[in-house]
Length: 124
Length: 124
DNA sequence: TGTGCAACATACTTTTTGGTAGGTTATGGA
DNA sequence: TCCATAACCTACCAAAAAGTATGTTGCACA
Image: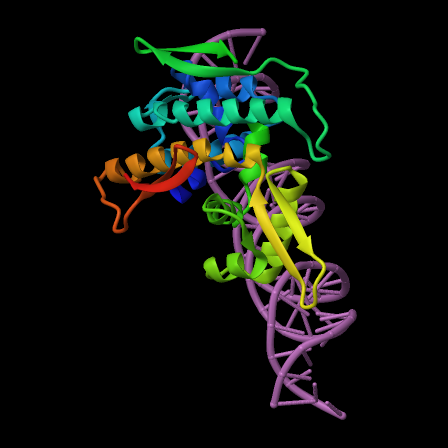
């Protein structure tokens, strides 16, 4: 459990994994897709994800350089964690807040599910 | 998802919730049960859990004081997150490490499951 | 009179994490 | 000749989280 948490803890890691769940992407694509994240953070956190065996990097020896990232098999299995976190989280937000008042989320919650070797978005 | 993560992120929160999954406990019991955690951390993190609506506190006006903590209904539903994190984590640890080598955990992994309104430990 | 108890609080320091601003590489096009 | 490009790295700085040490309360018991 501690291992699982240490793998996904990091301000941008879930966003990065989320991007890669829809398939192989290159550095600049991920960078553009996640607003607010700096390049330093992207390379730092994706490097940690690589060291943890969650993502794999494919370097093309070209100039200008090209690097593509994808999830490893065990990285893809993280989608179950995504699913559980989102389900509990959306339930939590519809049920109560700190003052015991009932609040409702003002955005759509979705989750990623694997169907026939495809990852699809499903609203919860 | 961010909400779920913010609720459980904190070095000792999962351990505290883990303690309370087996029933109502008082401050000193939790403190003794989690080695390495200081009293400051316990009161700080359990206060945050209370503010998030995960645990409830019952104060007995006695001297010396007595305070008992228990999980709220939505706090008990966190067990699904426990289950998923542990399952993925133990799978992760038996499958690979950073170098792609196969490693084995040198300790027993267990998970908490709800059966007939009872929370039981199950080895994975 | 003084010591211990439980459940904290408070001030301070250390560690960890994240952010800012710059530099690097080789090459193709203006 | 000069500049833009992609994917980084490095040094430095700020903020957040965690750890250490000590103080507080009011009563029971020695």
